[in-house]
Length: 402
Image (cartoon, rainbow, N blue to C red; front, top):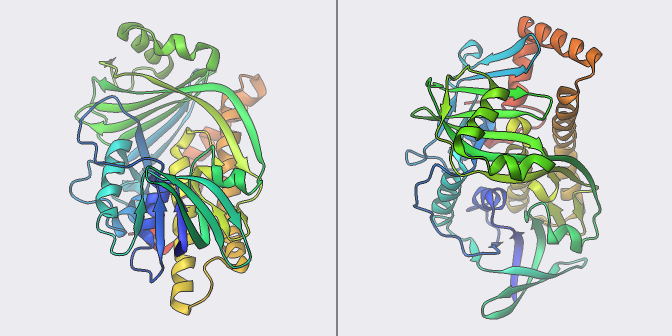
């Protein structure tokens, strides 16, 4: 039976980032991945794209994940507006004295970068494919059974980290309930070609039927996230290219000129899922296992990465001091450090979806007044920009301003 200090269950973006952050920490760490990962070398325009906050870019660069091979596109400006209403909020990195507000990277390419970095981890035990089937916390360690092609593999870990996504098995095994809010919307994800080069410009556009985001990818390509009522999602995704572009153009407008050449469309149902607590006996949840939020503002992965890096900091401290990585006081400290950011970010994304999508006339007037004030009060605009860049609350040392 393997004896571990830390077992990370879930080899997605957040779980892999945590494993990398624990490299050479002096801990016995294993990463259990549901499927065997491999580099995806097939270039494609038809894929999800991630908006990384500035703090996330800093952290991933510091960890050696993002390098010269990583095709990231800097976000230099952000334009936020509401269809049919006056006013807009414009954030500019140059005005803040920064090279960028963040960056856009295809999810496939971030996955590739994480895999390359995982391969350089000196002492990490990678278990793939391996699916958790039993989790039994006890005072001294957690007994875990993993299903593998060779049969059941049994381990004992002083700490188990659930990084296994929205439908987390770890969370379920711990009996942690969730609060679920269904937005009755779906996000249609694709790419488009823009008549005008975006040159680092990102757009967030609110409409009566849901928000729309346009993210710069270079060479006049842009990542598109279009939210529509779920009842319309299948029909909208199935439109021919011309009809789909007309639908997007009607909602977005013409700031990027004529949009053309949409990629393959994928629709994802949107809901907020919040775990009522983030830890149990010798177990802790991070990323989507702890909270799944609306993709508005691209907060999901960025929030999960902050969960993981804060935990990594605490675990590296335990390794240096020789204390127990699964001790209750450590998990309480992680919860305390993450509580404010987690609550503020999940509430902000939810409030923004509901308030910006409501056509009630008094709210429309309040939104226009809010845009007017935010655009003209520089300290407020700077604070909005810093929060959007991930510089909120207790930032891990990897994500600090560079």
